[in-house]
Image (cartoon, rainbow, N blue to C red; front, side):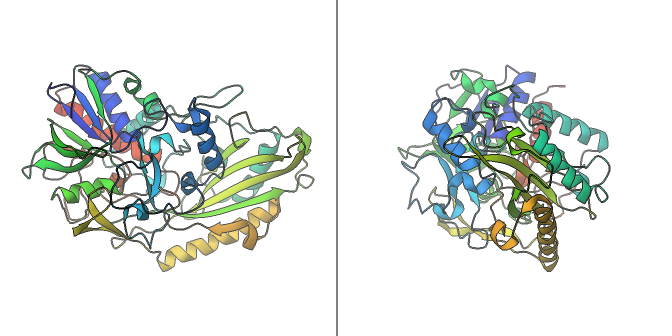
Length: 506
């Protein structure tokens, strides 16, 4: 299945953000290393790893923008749960699918989904990159190392601190939130512009950072240094219990099976499929699939009373061409006194004739949930999903403390809505179904000790293996309250550095 017979120094399973970060860091430090990347999906559009927001093909871009404008991750799939794809993956359209579409029992997390396309979630994500704080952090490598790892993750994602700076309307909205939360937020954790992985522009759409901006080698033809194998499901890792020799894979369209041998393997296949592949390979540590975590997502929207906030609707700017929001803002969680992550966006509604109709603010509160071992993925030894991998059953529920946290979140949303303008909780706010955020963590978590609660060491190397690393949300051992991509990218930075050490790079 490879065009070249040259030895593979690093095989990466998954072509999303995590795999691209590792590929970029290894390639930059060791351009002589041969990297092969494998993905089950095909590309959406004509450019490999291009964020859909930036697609030059109008039908691709418009479909993405039509869904992303809701500001809800699960809306990337469309309004309804994606139907079953049947017994196999041959011929399915690349894109987002609910887990249930592949046969998983996802009744307890019905909105859970995955990206079945080249670039993974990296071509769909909102590019919001709030940084972790307090209990979200996992400083397993030490305080100084953590700060450097997080800073490197920001550089890899090209995070801009304020690509949507407050306009006159956004400034008034921020004042409302500062008045409500300023007394309970920790220092530096006040409401502020949302940091995002974008390339700011004075006008027009802002390009998002997708896999091919992280690892530009994706844009070039395959060669001796790098090769991409798409439309190929990795069915198992080849190993002897301590060392991985490569992978077995199957082409999704032809059914052709083959092997790729490699000196080192990184699995970055998302929080649901990374542990699934380990299980399929007979690598089944006690903690595999356990400690599944996702924050709850309270979504709301209010029509702003412009007179009350001292605003003239005609003075509020419209969204830039190619954008669905005028501003994007962040209320950081800051511990027990202010436990919610707030994600805010605003928009001016305009009639077909160009008349300004109303100014609206969407304000989602993400509520932390407790890490519970019993929230987990269970894998079948006898049944397989549409991709031919062990069938997944998702076990997920909220604790009494989680429910109490949600009740407080609803009360806070009510206060926010009433301050902004026209808002009725029963009409304008809702708790989204479990899985809606797509911010899953913990199913192959890292830790300092192989004590039955972790799957990898701090660098993401699977306990007991010499050359097998994991990266992504699965490896994150903490309850992340906000968007998880930047936090998960720390695991890719750690894995890349460990792989470079194994390659003999200082």
